[in-house]
Image (cartoon, rainbow over all chains, first blue to last red; front, side, top):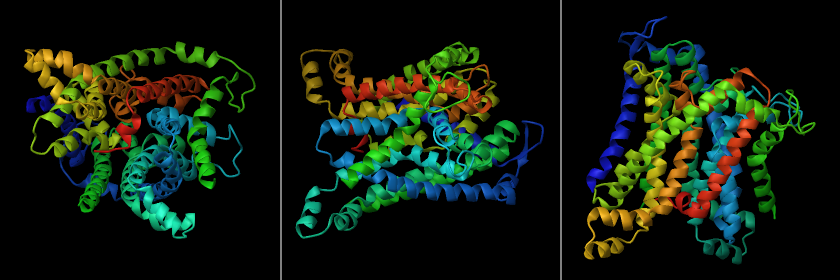
Amino acid sequence: MKLLLAPAVGVVAVFAAALAALLQYSVLEFIPGSLRTGGFTLANFRGVLAPGYLDYVWDTALLSVATTGLTLVASYPIAYALARTPSRRIRSWLLVLTLAPFFTGAIVRTYAWMLVLGNTVVTWPVPMLFTERGVLVGLVHFSMPTMILLLAAAISHVDPVYERAATSLGARPARVFWRVTLPLSMPGVVSGSLIVFAWTFSAFPTPELLGGGKVKMIANVVKDLALDSFNWPGAAAFAMLALAVTLALLAGLSRVAAGRAP
Amino acid sequence: MILRLAVLGLLAFMTLPTVVVIAVSFNPTAILSFPPAGLSLRWYANALTYPQFQRAAVNSLMVTGGAVLLALPIGTAAALALERGRLRAPGAWATVLLSPLVVPGVAAGLGFLIVAAFLGLLQSRVVLIAAHVALVLPFVVRSVWVSVTNLDPALERAAASLGATPWRVFRRVTLPLLRPGLFAALLFAVVVSVNEFVVSLFISTRVNEILPVAMFTYVVNYTDPTIAALSTLFIVATFLVVWAIDRVVDLSAVFLHHR
C-alpha cells in the first residue's frame, strides 16, 4: 500500500529537481551573450537590490498589500452568502459562478480585462489600462475565487447560534458582524490574506498584459531577464526571491493553523 | 437586503469581463466596440483557421492528454496510499504532493527551462508534459481522496472473503466506487492543464507551444477580436465542465471542507 505513493513522490522529485536547478543558477555568474555560466557568485542577488530593480520589488509589495485588502473586502459578502444560504441551488450557482473564473485560463481572463479597462465598454475618467490601478483591478478579480472559498469554509464553521444570540440580546446587524461573525471567521481571513498576498507577489499574466510593460512586478522582471535578455542567473535570483517570500508566508500560515489547533 | 445587493454587485464584477469577451467576440469589425455594432462570426473563423493556433491546439491535445493519462493513475494510487497506507504522517505526505501548487509559476517555469536546456529537450513536449503532470497532480489527489474517504472498506473485505483476488476486488469494487472522484479528477486535470500558462510559456518554443501561450503571443501583437472568439470557446467549455463536476461530486465537499 505504501509503495503506491512512490510514483507521485517521483513526480514531485522531478519538480524539486527543476527548483534545484533554479537555485543553482541563481548563484552562478552570468556571461553576457551566452547561456553558459561562470563560477559561484552572489552578484545576481546584489542585482535584485540594485536601485532600478529594487523599485520593482517595492511596487510588487505595495500592489500585493493593496490587492489583499481589496480582495478581502470584496470577497467577504459573497463568502458569507455562500456559507449561509439555506438553498442548495443558490449555493450551487454561487459556487459555479465563483469557480468558473478560477478555472478560466489566465489569458482569457486577463484579455477580458484588457477589453474592459481599455475604454471598449465605457470611457474611463482616468487611464486604466497600462496603469497600476488597472493592474490592481485585475489582481483583485484574479484573487477573489480563492479568497471566497477560504472565507466561506471559515464562515461555515461559525455556528449561526452565536449570531442569533447576539441579535436576541439587542445587537444591531453591523455590531453582530463586527463583534461575532468577523472575529470567529478570523482563521479564514488570515489564511486567505496570506495566500492571496503570496499569490499576488508572484503574479505574472495580469501585470504582464494589463501593465503593458509600464507596470512590472517581480515575475515580469523574471520573464524579461530570462526570455528577452537570456540572463538566466539574474532571472533565477528574482525567481528565488518570489519563491522565498511565498514559502515564508506559507510557513507562517501553517504556524497560524497549528497555533489554532486544540 | 444590503448584503444581497452587495453580493449581486460583486458577482457582476466577477462575471463582467466574461460577458464583455463574449459580446466582443461577435463584433463585426476589427476595431472593438461595446455593445457590438452587429453580429459576425468572422473572428471565430479567423481563430479556427489561424495556422499557429491549429498547431498549438495539437500541442495542447498532446500535452494535456499525456499529462492527464499519467497523472490519473499516479494520483489515484497516491490517494489510496494516503488514506489506507498506514503512513506515519499522511498529512506531511499530502503537503509534499500538493506543494507544486504553491510554487510561483515563474520559478517553476525557469527551473524547467534550465533543465530542458540541459537535457537538450527545448523543442520537445516531454518537459511540458512532465511539468503539467506535477501541476495537475494535486487536483487529482484531492478529488480522488474525497472519494476514498467515503469508501467503506467493508465492501472490499466482503468481496475478498467471497474469494475475489485483490486485483479483482480493485477492478470490480474499489474502482467503481471511486468513479465520482475519478471523474472529477479527470475534469479538473484537463481544465487546469489546458489553461496552464506561466510555466508553459517558459518551456515553449513556436514549435511546441500550447494554446494559452499562442494566445498570449497573439494578444501582445494584435488587437482584433480573434482572441475574444477563442476565449469564448474556452469559457463555454470551462463552464460546462465545472457545471458537470458539480453534478457528479458536490463541489462544496471538494472546496469548502478542507481536510
